Length: 244
Image 1 (cartoon, rainbow, N blue to C red):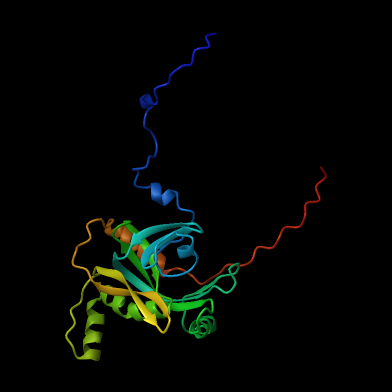
Image 2: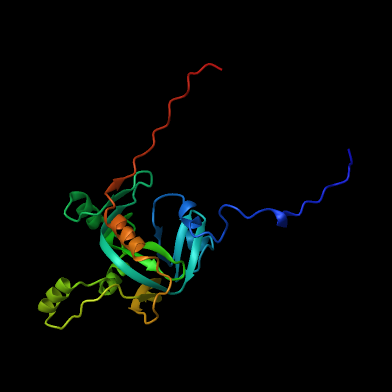
């Protein structure tokens, strides 16, 4: 047998199956059924690790991985619902969507205290332009809750809701579908402390990368059907008694 090395031309291999350009690749390689989450970063561990710059929006995908979206993003708000999140025990995270429950009320009360580990507010299903993905935007901090009052104006407004709003405000309101808006970041200071807050403004650039309407409807239905959850602690398994 010859000891000469055989050269293989890998360019001759057939291109079969999925590749980096496959449309379904992102759907099939996600770690779970959870939506991507958009977050405005200003301080904390991610900044200290130099994973993202302060005042940037990002999508976390792990403890040490954040997709940097920059200082402003264009989104299309599709729907929203109330959400309370209890993070005090990272091994038993509680999520609740019903503001009439005691769980939600407790989280809301605690969430008014700084560094309580509890958050509450509106959470939005949005379509983000640069990633071309559906994401969750949870307005659970004080500054995010304040700006959520503007974001709701870009949600779909059907005729009956427009009529009710017109009767309530005395101002003529036109019904409309989802409207594009831009989220920016602004640095504010109070005494010797500073942080970034979101700023929502109208976006005049149309979205051209939206998926088919059936996919949009399916994502809305899935988002609105999310149930209350409690991630229970995993007990350690007893030592095995199997003989070796």
